[in-house]
Image 1 (tube, rainbow, N blue to C red):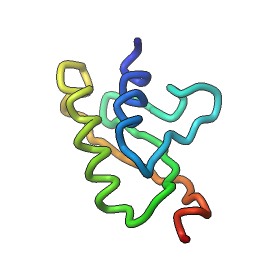
Image 2: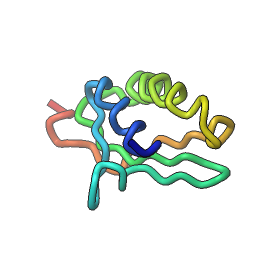
Image 3: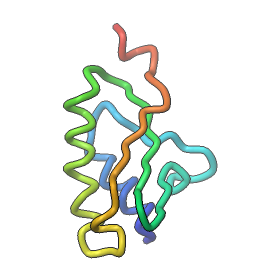
Length: 85
């Protein structure tokens, strides 16, 4: 399993966020030497605690990889309409 797939798998434990998938689950994650970017869709609000939880589950996945020291960017690309009800 690739690092991107492991990041997506870890995020499955965070209720209220899901990967913003284009082609495959791993397409929601960009890995560069400087940063790890994860595109997400929020299905609940408020965002700050959801993003804090997401960071807490993603960081351990990156711990023993070349991206351990990279900046982690969690990018909410959309908010599901159901989050506002």
